[in-house]
Image (cartoon, rainbow, N blue to C red):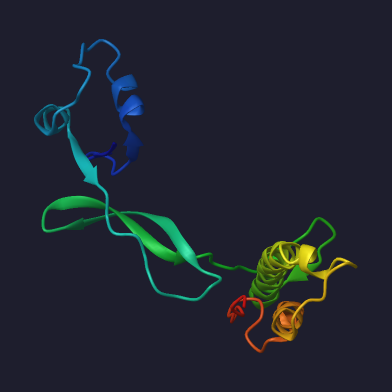
Amino acid sequence: MQIRLRTTGAVMYESEFRALHPNTSMPQQLSEELINEFGGDVVLEGPQATGGTVYQYSVYGGVEQIDGKWYTKWNLGPSFFQTEDADGNVTTAAQNEANYKAVKDAEQAKNIRQTRDAKLSETDWRFRSDMTPSQAWKDYCQALRDIPSQSGFPWTITWPDAP
């Protein structure tokens, strides 16, 4: 549970709130009334941010008051900023975003290829020297091998159906 102090606006977890009052014996389960008596407000869990792109996720953005109650606030992130390294080399926010997307694309491509490879290895027994695979199985395996050349790869994949 998070608690917001009215005097400072600081948001903290229950353990930190208890530590602010070391000489007070508090029950194991803090009630909203008790928190209120000590100048705090319970912070309720707000809805996660939704929408965005495959590169975005819900990022904690502080707290906000809605109809007299405090809620956690969630934003779509990550956010990108201009950075400068120790040698004074500047990387723009757009470059940082492009680098992030390239890393995420590579991770997703690796995961898709691993799934594809597992599906291919499930068909290996059909291609032993003492067996003759059907054309349908040959086509299926070729479709699996062609997945990286699909137009939406690595984020939009049309998986072939096994015969």
